[in-house]
Amino acid sequence: MAKIGVFVGSVFGGAEDVAQDVITQLSSNGHTAQLYLDPQLDDFLAYQNDTIVVITSTTGQGEVPDNLLPLYVALNDQFPLMPKLSYGVISMGDSSYGEDRYCGAGRQFDEMLQQLQAKPVAERLDIDACVSFDALEAALPWLSRFLKQIV
Image: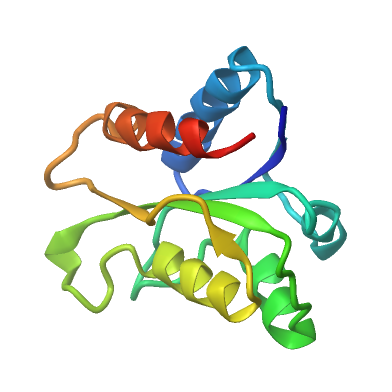
């Protein structure tokens, strides 16, 4: 089964709640899953031959939350190519803030991971708070498809 790191960017706890449930689902499917609420570059690099999931809300003008920002900056600065890394991104946002800001943090992470040559397991999931009151309910179908793709 897969070794999966779940890296969370959360402001008010919504992304963290989704991540806790994702960890439960991954573990109940036989995978080894670790949650990172204050992720560091070394934590992330430990998975460069495995699988990661980034679950993040979006702040302000489409920015990465403060707890995930140091990792994002470190990856961007050091730019470690990771062609063996498989990944998925669950991005949470509010479309009423405008298309350029909506799910901006997840979009930024997805784009950077692609530039680092990581391979997406599934297309990024954008969860709109204007449409989905329960983010976990919106994430479960995506997670089901994700689980079918990982070994």
